[in-house]
Amino acid sequence: MQRLRLNPAWVLIAPALVAIGVFFFLPVVAALALSFTDFDVYTVGDPTRLRLVGLANYRHLLAEPRFWTALGNTTYFVLVGGSLSVAVALGVALLVEARAVRLKALFRTVFLLPVVTTLVAVAVVWRFLYQPRFGLLNALLGRIGLPPIDWLGDPRWAMPALILLAVWKNFGFDTLIFSAGLQSIPPQVDEAARLDGAGAWQRLRRVTLPLLAPTLAFVGLITMIGYFQLFAEPYVMTQGGPADRTLSVALLMYEEGFRWWNLGTGSAIAFVLFAIVLGLTLLELRLRRAARGGAR
Amino acid sequence: MRRAPVVAAHVALGGLAALTLLPFVWMVGASFMASGEATTLPLHLLPRAPTLAQYRALLTRLDLGRCLLNSAGIAAAVTLAAVVLDSMAGYAFAKLRFAGRDRVFRLLLAALVIPGQVAMLPLFLLLRALGLVDTYAGVVVPGLASVFGIVLVRQYALGIPDAVLDAARVDGAGELRIYRSVALALSAPILVTLALFTFMGAWNDFMWPLIVLADRDRYTLPVALASLAGEHVQDVELMTAGAVLTVLPVVVLFLVLQRHYVAGVLAGGMKE
Image (cartoon, rainbow over all chains, first blue to last red):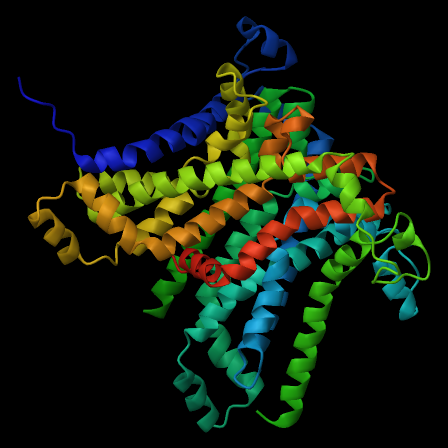
């Protein structure tokens, strides 16, 4: 009898593949399937009740005002919060990496601290910082003569408050990547522009930023993808309120799926989120390819 | 650079650093205050008479020490599993030849675009069928292996010279043996990075443990903290102490292993 000879490579990759396959790929495929069913709280108890409903969940979502609210809020958070994070990160990286700046290592460490800390913990802390009467933020505003703001209670301010927290929490991560991008630009390039008489602003606009463009595109993409998954901040700080103004797509999915056990609807929401993230990624890939083609 | 812009850059960075640190300073200060002091006007950052009362209450009355152990155990288990499974797979994808290797790897890469939340509803049903809801294992299993970790190790292992591996083969070592005694040792720096990222990710994770855990005794720190925050809306000092307990382990880990953290972010950031 011949012994079965297994390629040892498969022995090495099989455990990881099985784990990822069973606990990620399988559920993703199942989520797509679930989104075409009427899986709800009754089906949890009696699986024989499950029926295929085609695109009904998606149609229902499109007609549901709360879904559009959640999508609008999330888009607001992604566009405003994402751009702000990237802009702050870029500005800070340009400052930290400037040749004459001292204490670079210390600054890098400080800006990374919010990144590594637990989101739930800082959300709990920031909820107190935002407290209208004894919160630190309003105290600081008062110092410079501004009236107090009901950050998390005022429908107009709740989302900006979450954005401020997100920028504080995340900009250091993007700064780190920008710093690496800046360090990879050879100093001779900048020096040559300087010898040609270009001022600091001109060198930044005509030399540094164009060379940093691929990094900027990458950072923009991962920041947006991350921000689309907004969940813990509104869960801890506002529960989606006031008046649904901080209800995010992920929070709506959580509510539909795990509070009301509408797993069909919840899965449809999850797939809309997926479709948006996928669309953004493909768009970025295409833009990058076009940029490369144009450079040739 | 002339003098004035240099000074301005330092002032701007110093101001930003102070603003970045301010919430932490307030958090730590308030956690050592007596109940009610943090909301007494005028506001002050440092406790008038530092006290451990909040920490004592958390660890005794509210039994948060148990959650600390839960978090540590779960994060350690996820880290151990991910380091073993990801390093095996990452090394094989980088250095061994087998049919379908590139296709399987591309499929894994594609998974990076899928938000984790997409899998959560069916994953919950799956774990329910397996009897793993409201167990530690239920929190751990989705993190057993990660695409990110496999990619990270593969990228690093690509740099291992084939000559070293061939030399081991000539000496008669099998592939699994080579992985264990050669590849692992040569990949040690990236494994530290992977362990750090996995541990931090598991420690800080919120949504999945929130979904899968029901019994308070099994809560991880973030889940316990979120639940306490709902009940103790007014207890500023108590909640800040809870936040300090939650972030302290990851902050210390980060400060000690910062070099490896940076290496990991850049390895992920440089991929095209």
